[in-house]
Image 1: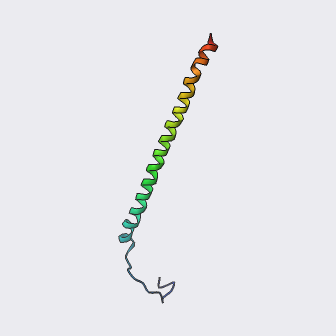
Image 2: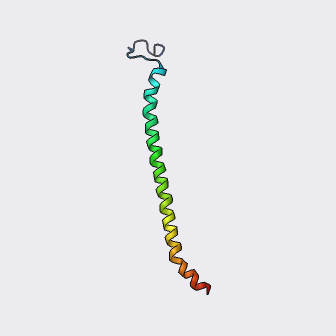
Image 3: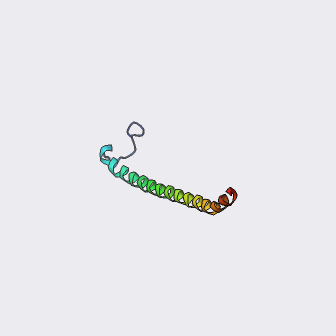
Length: 69
């Protein structure tokens, strides 16, 4: 900071290794929550697609049986 502007006052100066766990902890929690919600959304989408396809196949099974005779 002194090289950029020597007139600016500095307060609460700490080394990066003491600040980083607090900063990274919050970001890690946010990313974990985002990933969890994305995983749940993906699981719901897969289950929903399976349900739609299973319903469609169940409805058409009789049609296939009638045509095969």
